[in-house]
Length: 315
Image 1 (cartoon, rainbow, N blue to C red):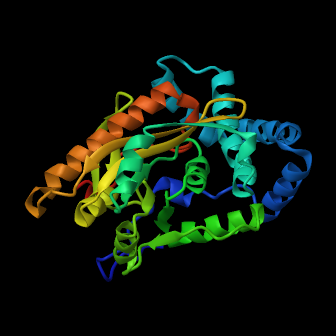
Image 2: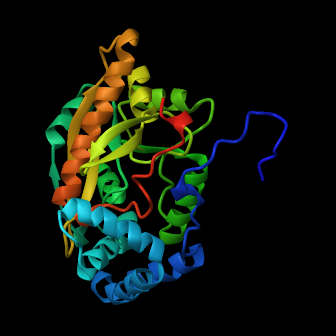
């Protein structure tokens, strides 16, 4: 409860997606993971369809936001089949983590686009930021790092999310704990800088805000959207390149990993950072727009994405 009087410095309101209660449980994940590994991918997908139907029928808010997004991405009124296909793609990306985390890469046909530019950066001896979105499967991209010799991939996320991810991964498979940098801590930038110097690629997500934080207005699917400037500003301070990344699910057992350069701050002077950061966010938005249109069912932001943030966060 916010007091009516007292200290004017109040806690910043959280973004809509943070305050939403997550469905599911770790116990259910363990059961589903065990079932999937025993039955195999094809047979366990029967259960997956049942789960997708449940969320399609009993998640009205997510269904409403999905309808708005698909109308923009498809350029037409989405059918029930379109909306179910988006939910099923989301469920599939989560389900396939079971096999990817357990090293069963042979079950998938994974193609890659833009790898030479990433490989050239890796050969330079210094890493880069991989700016992703809530699109497709990050685990497929992360698995590509396991398959490609010399390609080190770590992930940067807020501490609460890191704890959730580690709990989920422990439930899905007993493999090694992934390297995760906790954001929101005083040593976060130092930890990221240290990994970049070692030649690692640090993955961050650039399509959601946490609430009252600096954002930049962009055009996304013909509507005004507000993207956080923090990830790009961090790249500018760290003087590193930024690549867009996504692991797109394209039906059956097919995934397509894309890497695309969106910014390079290695020679950006401090006085030009603000303009460079805004331009980079706009380029990121343009690439995200393109993949939303080409692979519309891979977008997994089931909340009011286009809602304007608090005025204090627009600076």
